[in-house]
Length: 166
Image: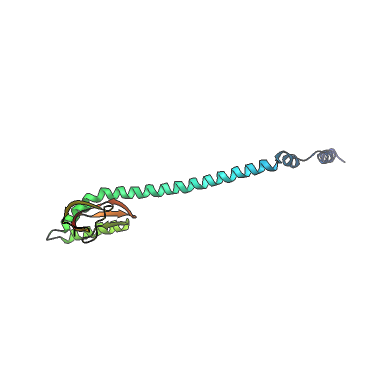
């Protein structure tokens, strides 16, 4: 035998007597059952907290997006109101009608709905009454002075109306 073979045989003999590194790791990492249960419980709580955090941040992102669109539409209200006044004139040019239709389709694409129609019951949650006439129990919208708008079911501008009691 040469020297290399002898040294290999000695290494094999030495390693068989000593516990391997894997066995030492197993011995060092064994923990009592109660401590294991506590660690497992802590892990499950942390996982649940993280899941709740992810859900909360996703909701916040959605609400920020919705608020941004609502803010954008709010800035368009003067333009929308002016188009309404222009469309109520006796003579309206084709270009103006086309542009008004485009504006209406953009609002529909953004899920913005008009509210307030003549003859419906007055609802203070979506209507802003500026004038009241008549005596009676039922209040009905007589005239719409300014249209109101909902965005994804949330009121972004109440309809300004004249109310008539019957």
